[in-house]
Image (spheres, rainbow, N blue to C red):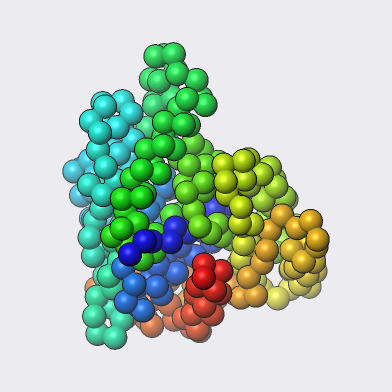
Length: 294
């Protein structure tokens, strides 16, 4: 077993990264794949969405137990404890069932203190004479080593990246087999798309990341404006010097893609969690992702 690593990233927030991450993770798990979600966003929304009905309590417990990605950073690069990512895994984290069985889905949760931790780490290491490049190399090297260990335990690892590009995000993108870029097809949301797929991914190609990122149109309302922008995105993806490719699947603006897990109650089925026609769309996206990874 050697997991395929998928990162869901965009420099812009509010475009559906977390929903894409968790819906794909649960769809993979529903097929019996052993799945790990790595939450890298300080908002910890992926952690809450995976935990489900009692998400607040589970996340509070992980934070209290110093068992989040933030603690991995602190203990490795400030306390020099040499901790592995696998020590921060919450096993069988999802409360969702499929075909009468709990999903085989594990989680490395995030924490609201992650952004502060990253800043403190930069201050700590620069005081010791480390440059930003040295810091990035250290974090990147350790992430790659830990991800290689995790790959032996899972079929799929999905990383929910925060808005913007941090040291952690760049390191995870560089370790990924596929980068998915959720983007609302409107003028404001696509302003930073060229920057992300161009400058950011160009820098990663210097680190042996050869595959173009795949853009996923999200929150599509079929308005005339979005139709025009979506067509322009598809034309850009089909151009000879394209900096990204695109999924055929389009995620519509539907309530089934924004269900509050607390409203579902304990142990919902995957059909209940992704209702209102959302699940067939997720399965279409899953098929395209699997084809891209083949």
